[in-house]
Length: 222
Ligand code: CTP
Image (tube, rainbow, N blue to C red):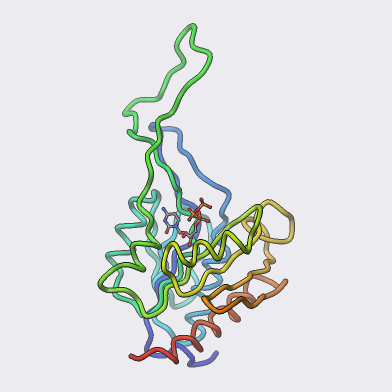
């Protein structure tokens, strides 16, 4: 327990989003939500008022955290903007980049003679970039970058493109890191360079990320 974030409001997103195709099918991803939930718990331990916007995951709500459950990227966008203003935004969710152009109202059926199916997808709104550009922009905006290759270059690119203050990059698709693992290693980039957190448990990494966020926030004018 510390009071590094006492009096601060922290908004965290976590988990995947599910984009419905029809009443029985959806497009999803392998995010477990564990990292975002650990960050929400750590921010609460540091004394913050915490709102956690969670995609579809089966994880217990951390003590003292206000949780808003959503399913799709569009719902997550609405919940995030409904929960602003905040002092800190941490976008740990793996938000779908694309969603079906339309949701079929009945189950999509195979037709005789069809040997394939083409889905038309459209871009979702980039919640992180919109939060960073909002008039109610939190003093500190933190993004995540889940990468399978060129982790550092991609993370630095996202820092600039989305105009965020910190990007926490992790490697996905390898064991001992990323989506379904209990452990993680994060490379946290800012405009000046990066620090490595871990390898360690997601709870430990979350405490260290929150300490970093609190230190940065203390430098910002209130
Ligand atoms: N993100 C978001 N809204 C989206 C897509 C992503 O807020 N529609 C946020 C995620 O929460 C994360 C960051 O953007 O904090 C990076 O997401 P990621 O999917 O790794 O990267 P993209 O920017 O989508 O780029 P790409 O998929 O091309 O790697």
